[in-house]
Length: 161
Image (cartoon, rainbow, N blue to C red):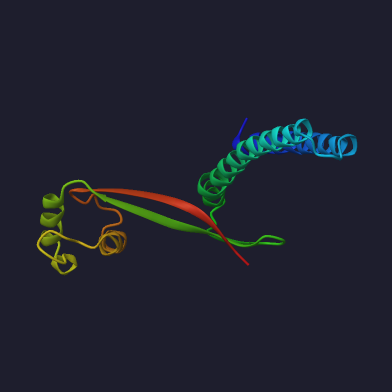
């Protein structure tokens, strides 16, 4: 079962549970309008159960959304040979390329930068601004292994109206 199916199943379960909880709370209000301790404890218990179920469904929905946006949609659009599309009722969907950079060996990185003529991105003797490094690698070395750096690339579906 994929994340989307799991989220839909969890949502259906939540809807059924909420309906039952509402009925129970309404029945309890009709039977015990004086709000005694038993009635209040039952309400608290029902609300606690709804909250726990909500957290579960919220996690499932987030996982389903993330799978769609960061994997399924970019893969499908790449397979279809498109990077942007307009969808009625959704808006514009485009694939955004993401890059993350993690310095593993600062000395190897400095040597690589110096050898390739990009000394200007080094702020001080040992510091390079992370965004500057990321931009430099993305624009100048996107298909090159950069010594001392771990580069991770990913895609994301971005929705705009």
